[in-house]
Image 1 (cartoon, helix red, strand yellow):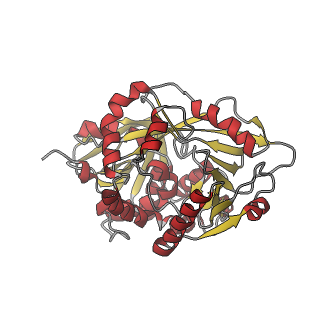
Image 2: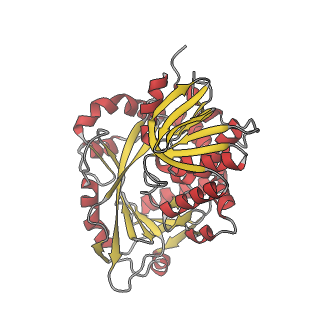
Image 3: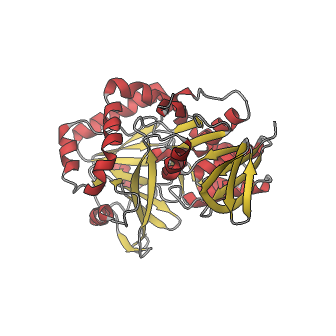
Length: 417
């Protein structure tokens, strides 16, 4: 079945959808105001996280909530001016994180995550992009026995229930894996399944290249210019108006700004994140990405240097950069690794699009024939790009979806009769 489709958004999600649609014979235009891979797909830990079968729940213990409320932590910060607007979505996020409600959410989330490596490998097998996917996993370090015991119990549960693989490292094992680590740690969980991507944008650009080589078209333009045109859709590009029978909205954190014009206003909210690269002193190297359990940030080896990524910042959409988490994290990071100077003068900032129930929004746009949604992947848009691309393409082309799409249905946030 040949159809014409406009895909709005050239991040990992949009590029993957466009590629899968084109492979199924659709005439596809991929449109964004920026080149592919320059949004949240650019700034992440570069991990295809097969182990991340459980989404991040909202903290529910008093100690963690009190620590975050003081707004001095590394893993989370907020602008007070943003709290009123975010109060509704964050309360729903907290509500969905209750154990009884979280359990079915985690089960639905896991059904997406378990496919992630296979779907990325299917797009890269036998190509130059295979070299970007390093099968080295990543590590979480612990220095307190109770925390390590809890981590081992969780890892065993994930191995038993979800087939997640890991290795337990002791102090000597950590030192052997990372000889330039400046501290000693009691133990580590080495998640061995995840693929570590040395240049996340390069992988997105590779998928975009495969899309154009297959006959797809990439245009620059304003996705917010989308409008109905007869029975189909029209958008304005730098080359003029483009029409199509169907449209896919894959604009990350901006998606709800567009869908609300068509009567659909999901409670999407953004978690801002920062990263910066650092050179290493002398001949020191970092072999694996890792998180020190007491620190709340990730250090990972990249082509550009060692990337330090922060946790979540809650801020107004138009707020300027406030990289206080990086400022808090950098001295801690220098105590973990022999970091030299920063590579960039200015840190990178991006926004992760999140939903209160922690599940992405994938499927038909309610009330609008020929329109589709693919956003709200939170921390895992890079991981889930090809999975989402395949799932949505199968739905759009009337194929049997390879997993049940019902848990991700946009209609769960549809309140209009």
